Each structure stands twice: as structure tokens, then as C-alpha cells.
Image (cartoon, rainbow, N blue to C red; front, side, top):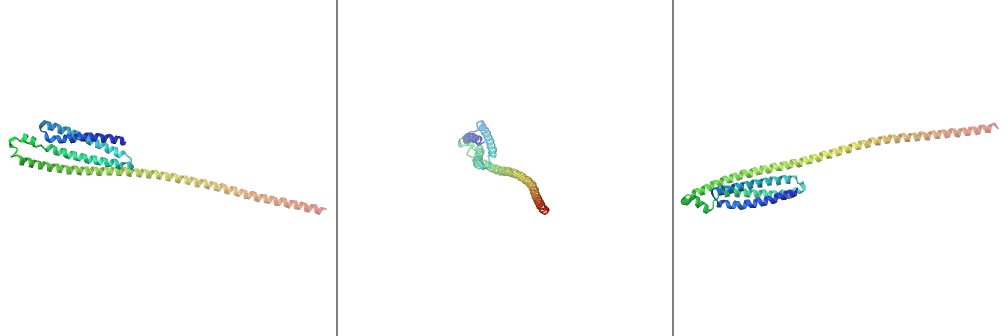
Length: 224
């Protein structure tokens, strides 16, 4: 399980390094070349998102006692992803001085104010978008916590159910033991009663035999 997570980590590191390099090149390009690079980076970022989802699934399958370390690592990767997305959005609206002058030509100086205003508006829109994304991520994190809490609750309920079954079986064994002890007690009582009866019978027979002997001796002496 952890080996799969580490494989995803290696892929994450490779792709993010490429993305970081390409993001730094975007402001220096224009036209079709910039568009193609933006599309390429967007595709790679989607691959990174899929890797994070796979790592998230792997973390959920790791035993609870070993999950904390991987959760921390996954959190740092998500933060790195957030930074990449933020840098990517800014790079799409950014231009190097050379590219800006090439696009604006002779009107570069007169249009500088409009360009600054446009940048501010786009930055404002990006900030709003980032706030919405942060709220969405917080909701997703809350949902994940709820899911994990539900899983833990289910495990606890399952353990309680198992313990309940064990207790019920133990009670049944105790009832069977009590029943067997009751039967044994009745058998022992009956045996004891028969032993007493036999001893009384032996005593009575002994007394009768003794009286018979005494009577016989008496009669024999009397006849003489």
C-alpha cells in the first residue's frame, strides 16, 4: 500500500518540476506559442490532480495507526498544488516587458495605465476565484473528515457488535454450565440418598441378625 503511495509521490515530483519550469516561461511568450504552452501546463496540472486523488485514496486504505505520517505528506502536496495553480493563473495574464512592448508597439507608453488597470482587475478576479477554491477545498476537507469519522464509527460499531456476540455466547455457555451443574447436583444428591438408605438398611439388617443370634442363644440356654 505505502509503495503505491511512494510511486505516486515520485510521479508528483517529476510532473510538478516540469510544470514549475513551464510556468516560468509563459510570461515570456505570446500568441499561439503561449496558448499551446498554457494548454500543456493545464493538462499536466490535471494529471497532478488525479495523482493527488489517487494518493488520497491510498491514505484512506492505510491503517489508522500509520495514517498520520502519510496524511501530513499529502497535505503538503496539496498546498504545493495550490501554489502551482495560483502561479499558473498569474502567469497567463503576465507579460514580460519585451513581449508587452511587442504587443503594444508605439502605444506602449500611452496604454501602460490601461494595462495596469487590466492587471488589477484580473488580479481581483483571481483573488475571488482563489477564495472560492479555498472554500471549496475546506468543504472537501470537511467532507473527507466526515467520511473518515463515519468509517471509524462503523469500525467501532462492528467491534461492539462482535463483542456483543462474544458476550452472548459466553452467557449461553454459562447457562449450559449452570444446567450441567444442576444435573450433576441432582445426581450427587440421589447417590448420597441411596448411600444413606443402603447404610440404614445394612444397620437394620445387622440389628435383626444380632437380635436373631441373641434370641437363638437365649432359647438354646433355656432349653437346657
